[in-house]
Length: 539
Ligand SMILES: Nc1nc2c(ncn2[C@@H]2O[C@H](COP(=O)(O)O[C@H]3[C@@H](O)[C@H](n4cnc5c(=O)[nH]c(N)nc54)O[C@@H]3COP(=O)(O)O)[C@@H](O)[C@H]2O)c(=O)[nH]1
Image (cartoon, rainbow, N blue to C red):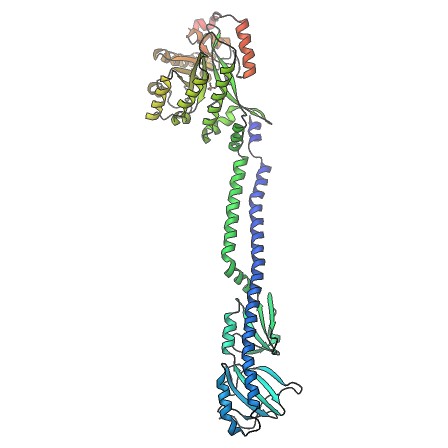
């Protein structure tokens, strides 16, 4: 029995395999989806940053075009004295946004500016353009008036004269900070760059980021650079795709739970039983109930067996408790009743007496009222075959004797269905059931029958049960009769209906037919043999 059970429930290896499946699949899915999200995020962060940087380059280019224009115009004034051109230079400084001032220098010495440079002593030296270039731009840490405000200076040469247009960097810097895609967008001019705080630092102090982008201007010698550290990249991914990752995580948990549930269900005895039910692997076995006094089979008890395709015949002791617990017992009993009804209705065999056909019914089935419908179906199929349906209720299970149960029992009685109390004396409250449930038959449990040979005290218990039944006008069927001593003792107590290995074991349909034929061909109705001496003296 043990090995059968082990074959039907998952093994330790299977458990290990289940654990791997349960953990591994969701984990792989989670890693794959997060990697996919990261790759997509990487692409979209780069695409967005490139787009922002290109827009920013175009914006700065536009400022440079204005500055270029201003420088060119200022160079048209170089042949006039400074006092005559300060006014126009002032006007030029006001014309374009972000242009702060326009200065003119000669041979590297500032000679004309619209800015009031009180602290400045002329001639003031300004950095000169390299010899061969006609124009350039540079980043300055500040101006003479505002040494802490970084500026871009665009310079243009005309002969010995140079025009310098000073451009404010504050708005450029703020806009770059806004568009940084979670990182720092930097303006690089020559080998200096503008920090997000407005300082000017050498490019060599910069380190390359996890994501590094450079977008140069096509028209002016500057470029934008973005260096995103791994930390900043992860933050950006979480900022943009955090909810997708959370969704992936939740999905992985759901998938893991589903796999867990599915694996548990599919490898459980319950699942195997459900499948077995669909595949009709539960078969009816028949055990005769004998009229031991007259020597004929007065009835049969239908007992189920699981004919497992690989594990052979499985005992009901293994699967009935689970079937009862899970509720599968109801469809199982229904299937059994249908099968037996169809066997009886198609059998050519006939019987002299009304044949009692007993099924084991659980308390759950009784409480559902479904049993009334199932019994009606059974009776309608076996109509005309002289069958009395007996429902055996086991005393081992608690039966809630309420209005519904009593109503069901009443309906069963009205259909002329017998109700037997199975395993009497072993369970809950046999006597109270007898009192409340209008029981027709007691099935004396085999443990009591086995006691018969064990001495006087045991016999007294058996006698009490038999007397009680007799006084209540309840029929007794003795179970588990294994030898003639038990048979005769029971007969001496007027227990003529007996069931047990002495007569026959539960058999599948084919064996039962053979047994029936042999019984009815060779054995005429018999009187019981005389009681052995020992039994007679006990009596
Ligand atoms: N609800 C349902 N319960 C069922 C159904 N089929 C069986 N069962 C219950 O399972 C228990 C074990 O049944 P089983 O292994 O079939 O044992 C029965 C007989 O084989 C056994 N028996 C009969 N004669 C003898 C005997 O002389 N000696 C001996 N040692 N055993 C014998 O007794 C069992 C009969 O049981 P009972 O129903 O109490 O009359 C058992 O509890 C079954 O009830 C089912 O379809 N539904």
